[in-house]
Every structure is written in C-alpha cells, then in structure tokens.
Length: 194
Image (tube, rainbow, N blue to C red; front, top):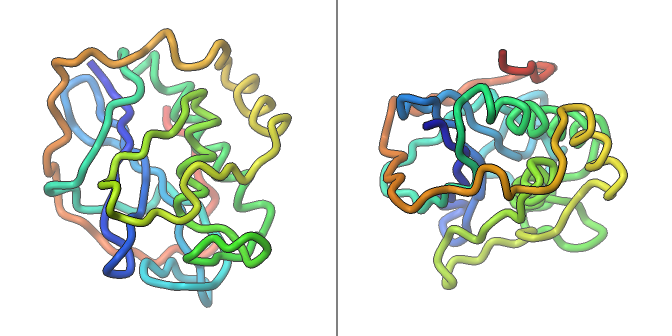
C-alpha cells in the first residue's frame, strides 16, 4: 500500500518545518515536497528571508520525525494527488513570493504555508503533526486562491476531497530510508512523477 504522509522536522532551533512524503507500495520513500527560502539561486534551509521556493528536489532525514498518513492507495492511485502537489509547487514558485520565516502577514510566506497549500491541492486538510509546544508559523494559511487550487485539482482529476483514500490504522511507517542530502538547485522546474 502506497501512502502520502505529513511530517515535521525542527526549524531554526525552535520551530517546526512541515512537509510531505510519498512512499511506494513497498514502503520506500520516493518523493518529498517542501517549501524553503531561495537566496542567490540556492535553497537555504535555515533562512529567515529570501524568495519562497517549493521543491521536490530535497530530502530530509526522517529519524524520529512525527508523521501522519493522510492518503493511501496503490502508487498508481496516489500519483494524481502527488502530481497535483508538484503542480501546486510550480504555481507557488511562479508567483515569486517573498519568504518570511515567521509568516507575518504582508512580509511573506514560509514552508508551513507551502505545506498547507499543497495539502489543499491534494484535497486534504493538512494535519498539525508536531507537538503543541512547537511553533509552526504559517500552518493552516493557504497561499493560493480557491480557484487556483480547484484548477490544479481538475487538471489531475481530483474531486470530492480525501474520502476515497483515508488511511487505515495499521500502517506503521515511515522509518529512516536513506541518507539526507543537501543539494543546490538553480532554476530547476519541478517535474511530474510517472
């Protein structure tokens, strides 16, 4: 059974960075979707400002990271949702928005805004997977308009929200499935998975 999970890693020593992971039918992590700051053409994982950049070209270590399964099915069934998330990231990037780690109204958006917006494009309400004591500024605040989200969903045949693939309780992964890697991405267009 393939799954899409919501997860959280520490950010700036005091907050949470929310993001999405895709696991295939065999429990292998095959994708992640994040929001970061882009400074001087490079992803910056600890920035407080810059340009907001959504990417599937980055891998976080998931050791002991909190997570919640939000969608399940075969990998083939989940790919329209994942591809909608990738397209959502592309739409966010096309807006050339300012990044602000604290997501203060007019000053910009952050990774948790990206996370919540991608969840909306999946047709789910992004869960708060971290501790109630971990601040996650931007969580629950959607970047794109309802019509933009609807257009993304329509493109990938997503309708009726998350009901079709709600998770079963017995699913008990992710676990650490590889090394994290820091990469520098300059002008990369996100590609749809096949």
